[in-house]
Amino acid sequence: MPADRIAPARSTTGDLRSHGRYAYSPITQRPDFTWPGGKRLAVYVALNLEHYAFGEGLVEEIVPALDTHDVLNHSWREYGNRVGAWRLLDLFTKSGVPPSLLVNSDIYRHCSELVSAYRESGAGVVAHGRTNSEAQAGLAEPIERALIDEVTTVLGAREGRAVEGWLGPWIAETANTPDLLDEAGYRYVLDWCFDDQPSWLATRRGRLLAVPYPQELNDSNAIVVRRASAREFTDMIVDQFDEMLAQSTQQPLVMGIALHAYVAGQPFRLRHLRRAFEHIAQHRDRVWLATSGQIARHFSEIEAGR
Image (tube, rainbow, N blue to C red):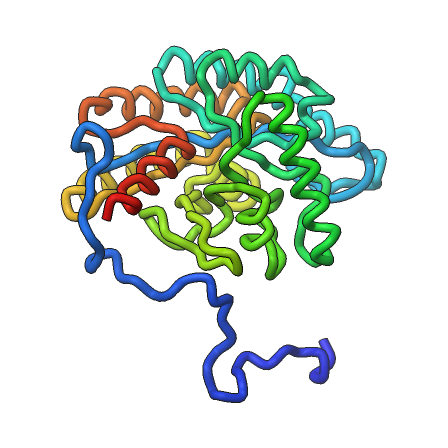
């Protein structure tokens, strides 16, 4: 990149450029609280239901595509909606772990019966943009506002109520995204992955809650990008859970697990993932198995009571 196009890292005052959304806060120096039932660790599992255009836009690839007529990767992704998500629904139901469903609004046009089945199981629904073939990064504010409004309208009509949470496709934002989400009525966002407790983001109208979302404990990043095996990914979940359960004696924590139907829903991975769900379920008397929305609402109520 030419030198004249590189943005300076420091302002004229000598400070590094900052997003200005939150101040530093060590986890060891915050007010104590508990989750429902006096529990110290809240656990939620986010299942991403995504729809992609064929042959255009952004893609998730298991192998590099040869051209735009990419039958291999498109079929792999579509397997998640046709098969993998249904197998995972059975796992959620039998384990008693409530899913948080991260939904592209275009899913309702593509396979609405899948969302209906999860809704009937008690899943919490989170807005996940329009399609994962696009990202918000770089959008002008009016265009981004229109996109958010479109998604909000579709999910509200389909779910019969306002959806409270948002995760942007590809976890991509503009400098205006938290402001626009707050103004659109969202109560929390999953994009900001900087803590093990919910934290407030400043917006131009007030504030928006950031609920921890996992980048490491995420099957797309761990398996597709870093090529972890199904066994290794399951071991990561179990180790994360055991360590955070021990740490939660010091501070109340949130543990998230991020799954994608076309990754975790593959049979050989599902066989291993079942072990992780069973391990977590065995400790249900010590942890709060919740949805991301339940976590956001409980934390907000605690904050309002202070």
